[in-house]
Amino acid sequence: MVNYIKNWWWSIDKWVFSLTLTLISIGVLLILSSSSGIELRYNFTSNYLIKKHLLFLPIAIFVIFFFSTLSIRNLIIMSLLIFIFCLILSFIVLFLPNEIKGAKRWLNLFQFTVQPSEFIKPTYIIISALLLSRFKKKNDMSFNINLLLLSLIGLALISQPDFGMFVLIFITWFSQIILLGVSIEIILFLTVFGIIISLLSYISHSHIRFRINNFFDKSVGDNYQINLSLDAFSSGGFFGKGIGTGTFSKKLPDAHSDFIFSIASEELGFFFSCLIILIYLIIFYRVTISILKIDNLFIFLATSGLSLIFVFQSLINISSAMNLIPTKGMTLPFLSYGGSSLLSCSIIIGSILSLTKKRTGF
Image (cartoon, rainbow, N blue to C red; front, side, top):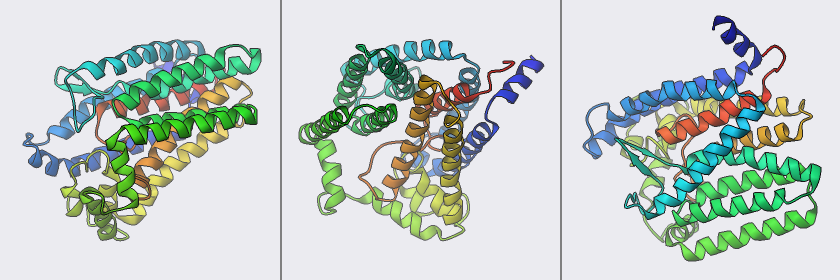
């Protein structure tokens, strides 16, 4: 076992793994700081949120380790099984009486809630890379199958509704298409397809329509959360007020999840917030450097897609908290509270480590 661990440590990108652990540690600190206000507001027992979060940490680290040890073949099989199972669950939740804030995305399992669509995110990117690489080599029906799977995902997510998750998956998939080097006709078709889906979602879902309208016209609705978030950014200054001493951030209803970056900005300051962004960018940079050395099309597309969905999600969360884009209930990878998000991001990092690891002697 000792030799196995040594070989594993030798094979993986240590920067990506170490920076991931750094993000997890920062997340624990921020969730601990933000949880007191949330627990008081919802009558939870003391340290309820941080205790639940800590339960998932060893599982998350194990998931990273487990996925990083998989061979390419086993990674594909594991992704396919998880994808099919979670896609089915994403349709099942639509018929269950478990609605939170107008959305049906979660399953209740014992005392925990699970969001199946979170696990569609990394596994579909791997399956998409497999289908696209096959299409490039054989020019068969793989592309049509890929588009069919994306349509099923879109149907499930928009019905929940979780338009932001669909946008995240779509733009990552679209990036894979561009990296594949398909014809301009296909790119134009997919662009029109994405615009049509967006317009239909805007017309048919009042929740989506409200958020977009409110972003462009602040008189449309309540801006309580985003105003508090912006106040938290401005009050933190360069060095922050200190952990646990934030005022605006503690009033945020979703400070522990969607607006965790506001907590970091107020309590740790501008410089530390920049450090968090830098960590995400270094992880993306390390993966990009590894991609440039890859001559296998599947590994190239899968690794590119996983790194892009990781950084896109980070940018969407941070931009939303800073009112640069319409607000979206999307977590910040490894920092936000939530077991499904934590494990999903762990699958992303574990899969990246598996795809980019040194193969000799392992």
